[in-house]
Length: 207
Image (tube, rainbow, N blue to C red; front, side, top):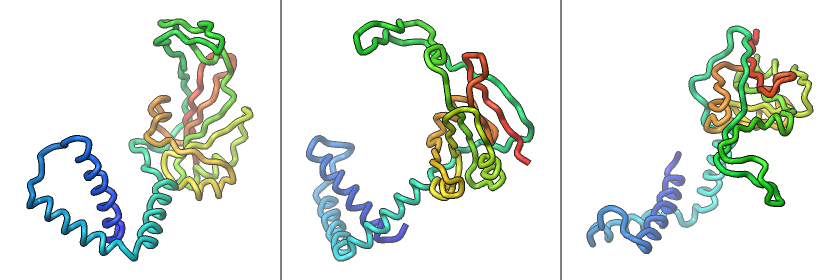
């Protein structure tokens, strides 16, 4: 990050601090000398910022776009070395009564509910590393039996992967799905286990 972005971020943060002082005291109260010093610093930063707004905003947009296209990769996932299959029970315990649009309770507090008893899971989820060419080639060749398939990255560039595979790409930011399903190996496939109210999680060893 260059000095222009640092200036922009400083001004943004300084504005937030100024606003905070209007609604209450946070931490130690600064003395007059420190306040005067900040005024001088702010003036210097503003003088640097003025006349360079377009350049700073352009670099800021580029930084945001870069982070959006390649989010923070998930850690701890490794390549599958053998094919394995296990099941996952999506059932959950209701924490409060759930009502429909007419106010009728259809799930009571404490009741264990399996969503597949209500509606089937007509999707196939592919978890892959977008920087692995073998995994990209493998997922491009897949022909799921479900009407919907979703390719979910745990690492890689969303835009370039979408262009390579010519379809919409998702990213499991923060590892919400990986943690939920207990996925440890890549690539992994999540779909519904035939004739059972369970999910099937398959780890695939890509050659």
